[in-house]
Length: 122
Image (tube, rainbow, N blue to C red; front, side):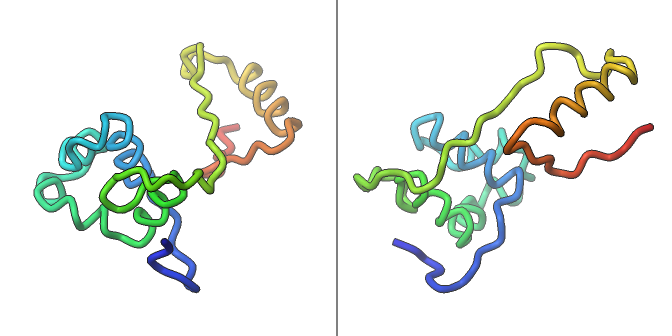
């Protein structure tokens, strides 16, 4: 079910995406706990519906095959999984030459987009 049919929704913020991921990861037990771990303030944590009832979050749950209540709705997810790459080196310890080389390799790789845009530190 699309809650905002015919309208474009804003993309999820980092904290909204994190809250959705945590809520689903921990078995959809506590929206407040997911919001707390995602970095929301106490005032938002005490009213989780303010985040989870937003059209963007509801649409994201639908794309993942879950409805607003978190019940699996037997639909296959509509969104592609997003690969998360975690660095195996401490990035602050890289030299400027290593960063330039890494940046060039990433720029040459297909389907890699930078968000937020990389700020040139040179």
